[in-house]
Amino acid sequence: MGTERTLADRKGRDLCELPTETITSNKSRKKNRWRTKKMVSPVQMLFETCKDVFSSGGVSIVPPPQQIQKLQSVLDGIKPEDVGLTPDMPYFQTNAAQRIPRITYLHIYECEKFSIGIFCLPPSGVIPLHNHPGMTVFSKLLFGTVHIKSYDWVIDLPADSSTFVKPSESENSNDAGLVPETRLAKVKVDADFTAPCNPSILYPADGGNMHCFTAVTACAVLDVLGPPYSDPDGRHCTYYTNHPFSRFSVDEISIAEEEKKDYEWLQERVLPDDVEVVGKMYSGPMIVET
Image 1 (cartoon, rainbow, N blue to C red):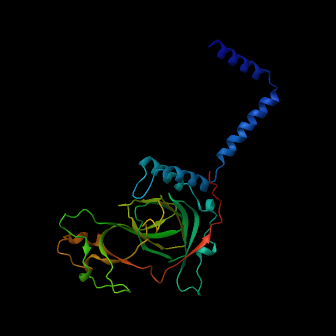
Image 2 (cartoon, rainbow, N blue to C red; image 1 turned 60 degrees about the vertical axis):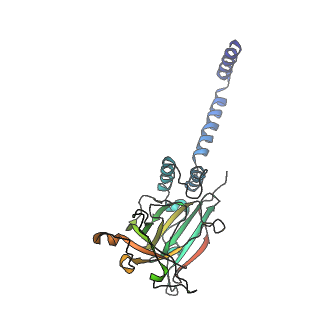
Image 3 (cartoon, rainbow, N blue to C red; image 1 turned 180 degrees about the horizontal axis):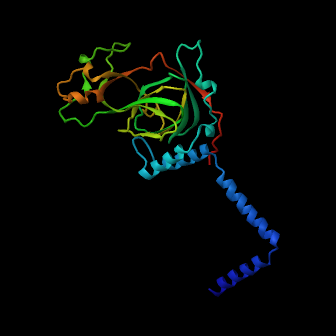
C-alpha cells in the first residue's frame, strides 16, 4: 500500500512540474479525440446500432423492447440530407415516356443479420402488397406523403374455424393452372402518413407484417430488415392480391357485419407486371465496418 501511495504522489508532483503548454497540449489532444469520436455520421450510427440490436437475432426472433426503442430513436433522428437525398433528384421524377412510375432502391448495407436500404418513390409509385417472413422491420419516412395498408394473418378464431379458402372455392388460378393459396387477414393500418412522423415497426407475427406502399407525393422510405430476405434460407418475398371479405364464403367463419370491412382475403401472386423496381448505387455518406 505504501508503494501505491508513493507512485500516486510522484505522478501528482510530475504533473505539477510539467510546463503549462504541455498540459494545454494534452488537454487539446483529449478534446480533439473526444470531438472526433463524437462526429459520427447518422448513417454510421444507424449501422452500429443495427449491429448491436440484431447481434443475437435470427428468424422470428424479436429484439428486446429496449433495443427496439434504441433503434427507433436513431431512425427518428435521420433526415434526408443525412443520406444524400433531396426531393428534386431524378429518382422522384416521372416523365411521359414512362408507362408506370419507376421505384428506385438504394442499397446501403446487408449482412446475414440485417439490411439497410432506401426506397425512392415518385408520385403514384406503388410497392405492391408483400410479406416479411420471420422479420422485424423498421421503416422511416424521410420526406413526402405515403399511403400504407398493412395486414396480419388472422389467428384468433375458434379452433374449428379455417382461415384458408379451399382451392375448389377459389375462382382464380395462376399461369400453371394451380390455385394460389388464399388466407384470411385482418387490416392493421390503412392511412396516409406525412413526414416527419414516427418510424413504423412490424414484427414476424403482428404489427402489419404484410404491407403495400402507395406514394401520394414523391417520398423516400428508409428500411431496416432483420434478418433480410434470403431465398436459400427460405425467406422469400411473397406478393399478394387482396379481396374483400365477401368475395369468399366460409361456413366456419362468423364475423359481425360492422367488422367485415376490417378483414380481407389475401391470395398469393407473382410480382405484378405494372411494377418496376430498379437498383441504384447509394451515393450518400458511406458506412465504415468496424
